[in-house]
Amino acid sequence: MIRINIIKFLFLVVINLIISCDNMNNPSVYGHRGAKGHYAENTLGSIKKAMELGVDGIEIDVFRCATGELVVFHDQKIDSLTDGEGLIELLSLDSIKKSNVLGVEKIPTLSEVMDLVNAEVVLNIELKGSNTSFLTHQLLKSYFESSSWTPNKVFISSFNWDELRAFHQLNKEVKVAVLIEETDPINAIKIAKEINAFAINSEHLLLNKENISKIKSENLKVYAWTVNKSKDIKRMKTLGVDGIISDYPERIN
Image (cartoon, rainbow, N blue to C red; front, side, top):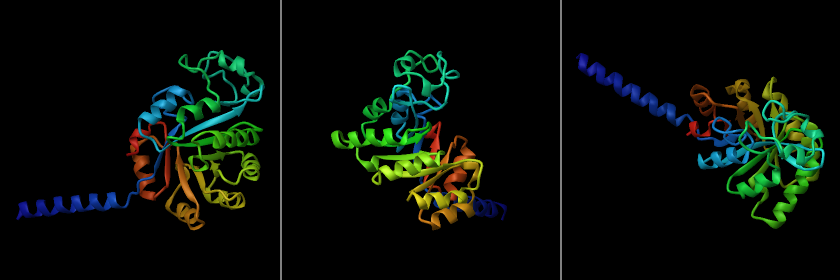
């Protein structure tokens, strides 16, 4: 009798595991700043690593430097991540190129990143600095005309909703996503509809069953950032997010 009960118990455990797996979707996997958990963020080496890990896409950040080029970097100042110093928007490209990210690699331009990725995965370009929308639009337009890049291989995101509005006014081909933190994701639906965004990219701790359901009822996708721990990855999958952005993208699958 005891043996039969044990077998029944094990059978129920297996069934519950199967049901649990069935309830979890398989979201798109995005490497955060390349593969930030493995290599110096937002560098060509980090992006190469993310691609080697089999990501669906890569998230990067862009600023306009003083000489007008778009450079791939996250912070306003280069002080904490490089051996140089200064506000990136006030530095020339030549000055920026003299610095090393964590002593490993140079700060790349957006053009260098696009040449490396070569449309093999989706590129999520986050507009970090001011006056980035027009330059990004112009650069993408030139790549669409002269390379294998197509609008469906890129999307733009930003916490700066004015930059998103400006980009959407310039370019209706490339999708945009509204970035949020420290607020209920539902609060971003209005701006998302205004600029015809395809997704809301939210800090994962803010997401729950109710607000994800509301967002999806508005025909918007949900991308979660930055999801690194196994328990959080499982939760995001169970909640049914469409994409996960992670420092360790290999952990998603």
